[in-house]
Length: 403
Image 1 (tube, one colour):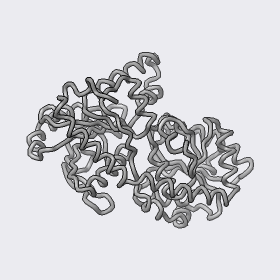
Image 2 (image 1 turned 180 degrees about the vertical axis):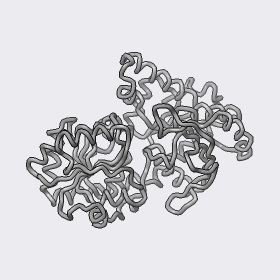
Image 3 (image 1 turned 90 degrees about the vertical axis):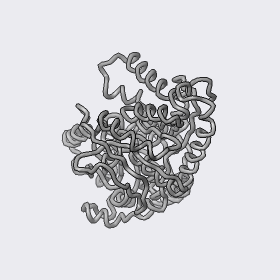
Image 4 (image 1 turned 180 degrees about the horizontal axis):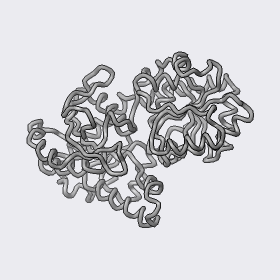
């Protein structure tokens, strides 16, 4: 696997890679990851997933990206120097996880070694561009994203997407290689083991205080301001309600200011990044509801994690989130409207019996999205791609393929 991002940089992409690596290793596969080095790390090592060796890490020297200090780009000289060492491993397939340096180097290696390549399309870049590049005219902005996405997807043997909505979008772009919907799975038992009582004690939250939780990147595209517009409506009828925000990102300073200007500081708690293996599962267990307003998710892994923890979800069923929210099991869907979300939250916070019913449904739903099942689907897709690759050279992989 090649990627421009991985732990300690916390992201959905890193979590997806870790989950699939662990599942593939359990099936008997050997997985290596080529990735950038972050500050203070050594050049290579073994990743640990719940105490298991998940993958050999090939960490390469990297540089920070201007305007995006959390991100890294692997240095081209280091990539060239690593090529001969990688050749000795005799890989069967290359799985490209991100569309930057890791994509183009992954394609280069696949062509050089004459092995198939697949890519995962994790992020709906067209929507992200609206938030981060608003000065570029909309039609030009969307056209650029679609053109690059189409070129990258048509240059590999197969594409993995986490939701049906993303598959439809890529087909609309003119993507020809096989596209498979394979969401990232979770270990349901892990998130069912959280200690909510201890989490509340540690963060000085009263045992009976009604608590909402958002987990994810604190960024403009996540639509978190909608939660701040919703909160005053809940506070009028439930004055002690608390909104917890787990995560960090570029929108946090703006939201902290918004909380102050709207006199919401006592009702909002910024938790920062929480470790997924311990603190985050405790946060799920401590909350009464999980609230998720994002409309740009290709999947929304935190939704599955919350369901696995038995935490009912109230969210906007947009894009990839609709695959879960649309089923109505353990969840309640709302419009992108603060009043609608406030009404649903108040209804559930007041009805303990209904919350218990949704919690049971949530755990049953999460069991169908297990890490093992999703790894089996990915392994089967790998086998299909390897079998077909001999007939279609990589240079023409995007031509004459059926969806």
